[in-house]
Image (cartoon, rainbow, N blue to C red; front, side, top):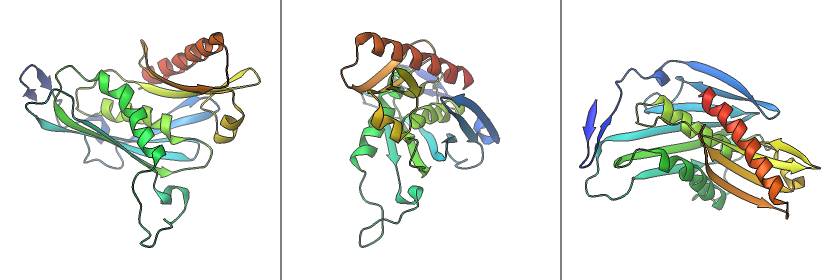
Length: 237
């Protein structure tokens, strides 16, 4: 199906999308399996996956309008990310027992997902698009943030939205000279650095890091290791 904007024509594939069929795949990442399921829940979305690492599970959905917003000089992409209390087996502690406004961690994770995804849409794409990451289960070991980056890419890639360049995200830690892929919360407290990298098969798209004065060569090695894992994840998608 063709849709035009003032400067470009975009092709949306037909309604028979891959994500409508049930599919479950896994790949080794660090010390655990990264497991992805699609076609079972959120089938009304253009693309959806449930992505799991350890016992942390996130539902990621992607939806795009079919009518472009005229007069915009930017891509109207919205990213939402929520870690609801039920994912950790808790009930909200406020009077009404309802979820409150997004926490600082949730807002920062939205930006973490937005930054690598936004530049990979085609120039001139002005269709309102929404990516939502909902943490279903949090195991208190594995942070959902970088996993959601990969999940967002998969939801977009499985949809009929014109997004043809998959990305992935990984975290790298360093303990006693040994690099760790997607370290746990406990390992991160001991780690000399917390490096988050997102990218495509060809290049690194985003880097975010904090470190305890590690050398430049260590950062370069960590980036190379991260991109090696990102390549594997992109080819897997």
